[in-house]
Length: 339
Image 1 (cartoon, rainbow, N blue to C red):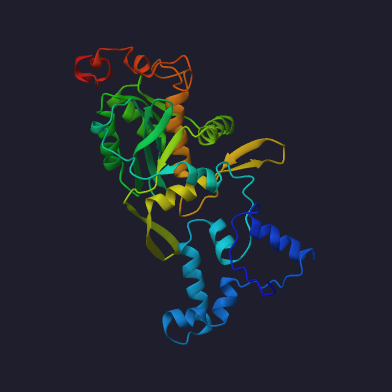
Image 2: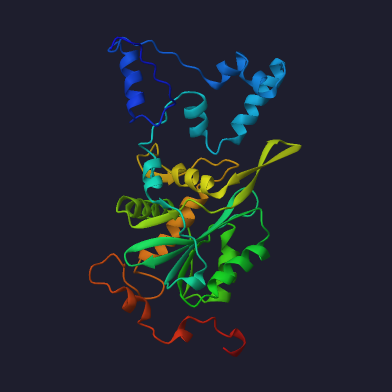
């Protein structure tokens, strides 16, 4: 007893013990000495010089900070981990702990090695953001991610090739695609290939995005969804720092997924209406969130697409749910030339 206690940490939101301790110190309720060291202060005291192994000019230090800033997957990470500013998670649809609790290694598999049924969600992009494809397998009452694809700046033909290979699997019951804007023609072509009874275009509106977001949130709250943590994939992201220069950096897909799922916030407009959206950055626009939400919509929404029941319903039987059409030719891609 009687020795000093030193607590060193960054924030983990505003609900953690560390944040509450700081609040008490600032209010004078704890007789602690508070020292805050941001990345800017650390660099001014020689951190970047030590890392680079030489004396840097002020301009070089500023460029070093700018480079570190650009590497962050979200502004929340920069403010919280580098600038010592706790970020409020109350407005995030999916908190980090909910995402982490639903994460598991070793769940990604070839569809040919799984029983099915499968449900697909696609958020479409071409240049600035990622096209993201999720394939969920309904395992009892649990939706498990079996395939996760993130396609940066990929041409339409290549994107279609990847999606159509998934649609070729006869156990893909339903595929929902964001057909808003760029996705309209992409969806139409996918419907021509895989059949409009399996491929559904979803046009985003504020009310529909609210439904999708709340449904996805429910899956995480109910522990009825499992997402991967070991994709083994690195994605090249392009950051247009200057008009005449683009910077390419490589980030793990699981990191992109985690930040993207956390990025969507519930916002209140000046008219008092709620809307769900993410900050638009070079790192995405909630791409993984909306693709996963569309896959969940494909699996859980009984009102459109092929007839099936919500597998969480106690009266639903998984096998009957999928095999009510026992003739597998029902799921095959039709020969359009013979129609």
